Length: 166
Image (tube, rainbow, N blue to C red):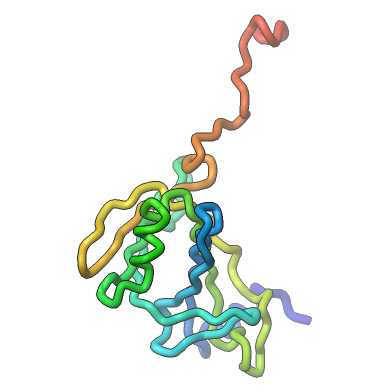
């Protein structure tokens, strides 16, 4: 059986690249929204339907200098698909955003259907609502460490608690 990388290499020429997004508002008591900017028709992947929605993203690139990516996601607000959730759940702050990337031929209903054939998911949390107009809503995303102000390691190592430090 070919590896995912071998499959990607042979597939990428023939099949369109697809981005799928999951917005998980359960931390705020809400539901889960699934949408895609990659199609004008609903897409199904791993049994879940992704609604077409105009979405623009930027800033997913990982740098070698150690800084974490700080992506931004902008969704349409013209038909207000997320407006009720934004109003009810404090602008969706701390809600999880997962970006999944695959190719169209791996989606449900295709001959090469494979729910596991995808790039590693990008998991971020909504850190700040930057823009909210009648046309669009833009959020800045953060890693779990940034979003919840976590430290690595979780405690400070001080001389009085750790005598081996000098």
